[in-house]
Length: 467
Ligand code: GLY
Ligand code: MN
Ligand code: MN
Picture (cartoon, helix red, strand yellow):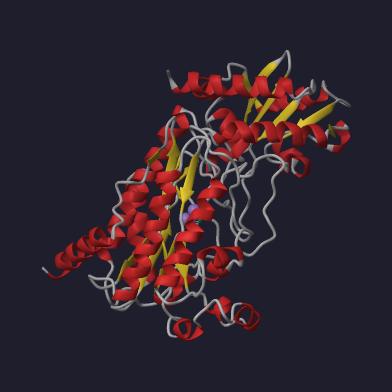
């Protein structure tokens, strides 16, 4: 099946879902407009609204898609003035967009005002970017308010939910893009793992890793790359800086590439020298065991939250074995003691955004509990879903020196041991996992993760540098 046919099928599924959502009004889905950078005559990097990109497969600034039962899809393609064309590349024509997206009725965006005018006063669902309400003129619509456009908020929410649910399972075009994004990430991580050494900055690793992402087809990073050395490896979303790494420390890299709108999201943790220290290796193996168990358990029908709870128990047991926690695993997890060291969820949906939509089943909400508050996914898994699996163990000084927590967990934590590890940093291992009909596939499995394999890469990298 061609990409265009896959896109057409995708829209047919959406039409069926929207038709059964019992709304017979028009639906408008703007792609969003570029956002100007103050003090320049350029724009921030453009991110199309994921709903527009899902429905069209393209990320065209200032375009809009419309749908109406009985009337079908219309794509409004922006064109630039002669003056603008002096400064900017020409966007694809309406005909080119029709060929790429399979939306046969693709017209110049100047027709959007008329399309809206002929629906004056009717309730409309407004998905995609809502910038059209504030910046209508930039979509070629003189004034949003004078159109008396009535956005039916209830229908907008209903249709948005139906669309989000459909977006969970990835189709062939999406999986092709995601596979390429993951592959680019794997090469970038390998480059950084080979390059790391005593005396290098976090920023130097980031630069070389991202260069490899881009050489391998990445349009940009999927999110701000996280590179933390030593204590910085415990900052969950730490920004790489000029900190110089030293032998004996860990480096945590959480980074992914984006290709045609689709994200990859991969984490590895490795030693600056060729080998893990004893405690680093012990705790690394605890995180690895938790991750591998979760991957082994992932499959259709499995509740993602149960994987998180199993990982929490494995981490709690590992921390007991390391002399950091005290007590039964059941009691420790029930009291969220493990979350002092694993203060985030097991992972999230991945796709057009790093934290892709619809991670919670309709009717479920995050629990207001330390160990579950940051769990971004709570649903039964199904074929085609792509999720991350990313447990970790961290020594976050802010958490571990907080007097209230010290008091609450006075008995469950061996605080003397913890005090000796406050500058340990953190360990996270993250893979991108596709749920299949009978289990799962690790999309990022080409990136090694056993302690022995990591040390072999490090020895090789250091040898290459010295040889
Ligand atoms: N890198 C962001 C995340 O793992 O959620
Ligand atoms: Mn990540
Ligand atoms: Mn992630």
